[in-house]
Amino acid sequence: MRITSRRKATITFLVLGVSLAGAAVAVGMGWIILNWRLDVKVFLGILFFGAITTGLVLNTIFLVREIRRNEQHDSFINAVTHELKTPITSIRLYLQTLQRREVDDSQRREFYRLMLDDTDRLLGTVEQVLKAGMLGHKHTARRRVPVDFESLVRECVGIARNGHHLQVEALRFEPAVNGTQATVDGDPEELRTAVSNVLDNAIKYSGEKVDISVRVEIPDEKRIALKVQDHGVGIPTQELKRVFKRFYRVPNRTLTHVKGTGLGLFIVRAIAKKHGGRVFAQSEGEGHGTTVIMELPRSVAPGGVAQEKLA
Image 1 (spheres, rainbow, N blue to C red):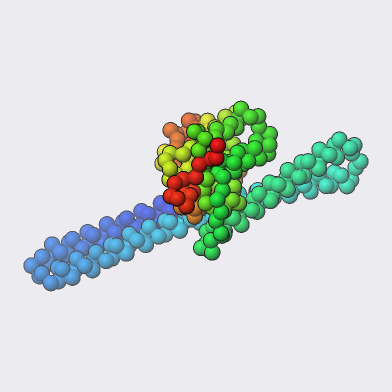
Image 2: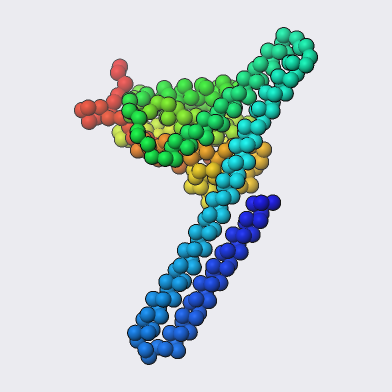
């Protein structure tokens, strides 16, 4: 209801701004036509009405952006509230069950497992929000170290596979070819966060059948690329760039039950940018899957040649 009312407000402000700008242009043109012989007054009139029109247009753009930003913030608050409340409610329910009645050992172990899963989900949400807050502000960069990016991606794939209870063929890892060392200079924890967020996003929007390939490629001696390709719901072409904005979630997705904070890909973009790289998405549209590509600068040895694996 609130989003609908704000969309109506957005349309109202847009129509009002355009109407005022049009009226200003009409009045200005009329005044110029009536006073076209008075050169100085005409010139000043053009400047005056041009300034008014520009101000109206900029004000309208600002208002519309603020309304959209507030909508995104509301969506974020609702998503975070759900992501926090759901596991807390679940944990409380299991604890009340254990407190009020006797359960056998197998059921008690199952309750413990489910509560641990809920605490992991809760911790993941909190860490995402904190990470987004840190990346959203400039701060002193951490000391960078050489990171075996291929090994890091392999580790993240294993964690994601175990965490989501997937078979090897559902989440496949393909290492770099030609035995080339895929090394980058960076913060291992931040890179691990970025890769994990890309994998979790692909799994989340794959639907019932998860079919994801993860590849580490070296396009040239200066770049390393991580490609995560899923066969899930896909992304409309006009939304491909917006999905990396803070709090943004693609509307009208096929999987409406999928929850999230809208921070995952924003964090990926921030980390990639901080490491001198970039991230972008490719998709042929809804229902055709998505490929997320993160490119990072390849680590260069002191001699000026990219590091290679030792035989």
